[in-house]
Length: 426
Image (cartoon, rainbow, N blue to C red; front, side, top):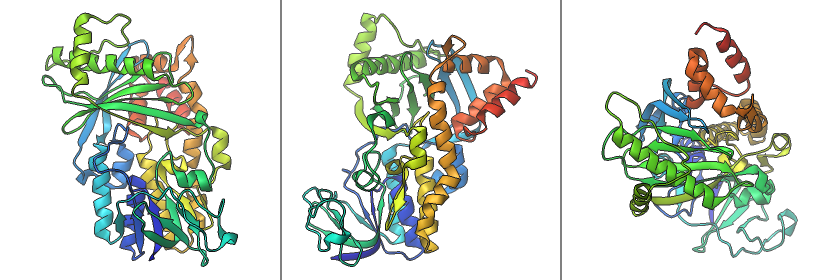
């Protein structure tokens, strides 16, 4: 039996960040992760300027800095934004590896193996959760420590268990309870080659008839394309067709744009030409598909759902910490890891619950309250159409929108900020 102070399941941004911070302070940490090497996550890989300012060392990872973005409304209205504060786009394979290697160098143990699905018998049933055979391979031992068994037969114990294993977290389902489909979002997409001609623009396009958006995020050696939408209204066949149209339009627009102009994408076509179909088939041979789920908690859930308890804590997506409007979760993964580590190092891990609620819980709850209105109608048209229309004609609103995209503008005071900007001279 290998004994540790803390076992963290999941070596994404949240798990690795917490492991590094704890290990540097002398805590014995085991970081268990069974994700196959090189397996991509369905994520645009955007790291907000807010995150970059909080943790400047993130810029050491190999990525692309973005200071301009093209946005499209559901009806195809175009807005070009120049950002005051740039954000970064990373390959999630590269970014996650960067954070995991920092954790490894800090002294923790990385165990590249999945938690067992076979289960094991508890020694002390009075301290167990569920049945005497735990299908997760996780349980409490006689000394009130957590026992974790991996698929290769390894057994590990620790006084504290941290779940950082993503939106589908088995630990979260066991300890905090499962989330309904209405509180989950779906992200899927493709990694595709960089355009051969023209610049690789960063694009966000809000979907017609669906909640959510499509993205094109150029990385160092490829473009990440994807769609994020709600799980309860997910129609894979229709949305996949929409994404392929978006992807081909992207390449067509980049190849025809001159050096002095921005791309102008022809989105959401009703008729597809023979040439367009040929381009799709050609792209299918090169693109690599990926998909994942993202938490999108309802307002009432933020008041009742716990992210910690006796001897355990949840971080990042496993805790539900993602922006319900955009699906962005990297900042909250890193911040929740930091807050938990700080509480643990002060020997007061029970304070983690209060810390995350005070730090960003109100912001995420406000975002969940705004999601329906953000993707709903305003004055007879989608709000996202109106938002882009107003921003095209008003510098102040355009500035606030740019700050929102970069992560510097939150939702709590967004309405006040937009109203104040609208009153300023054009």
